[in-house]
Length: 157
Ligand code: FES
Image (cartoon, rainbow, N blue to C red):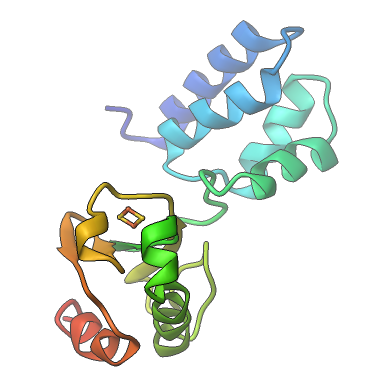
């Protein structure tokens, strides 16, 4: 595991060098950067753009288009609300909205206390429990929006 940021940037340099001039270089380099840093902050995006002779607009465009990329450090708890078909028809959108409302933040963002990052996800393979939400490895099913405040409270220190 790479511990300090110098090592991480050195690793990023290697990835950039390996991908330069190849098709799909921006996407692949962003994926590697996310693995290395855990997210892709602006300084990393700038380095990728310069290293690949791309533009920041292109790198930023890819980073913000795909929900797999996080632009800020993830919270301690990753919340994934399933928006797969089975969950959607059972009201998972309302559950997701409640999570956003209670945490006063948006999908893809981290709560101000740094604890929770909210994501929408595809089918989690637990459709029988729809609508489903995961918090790290914990699975919650058959949810209604009113369940959300109590569930989130369990994770607050
Ligand atoms: S659609 Fe949500 S778990 Fe399958």
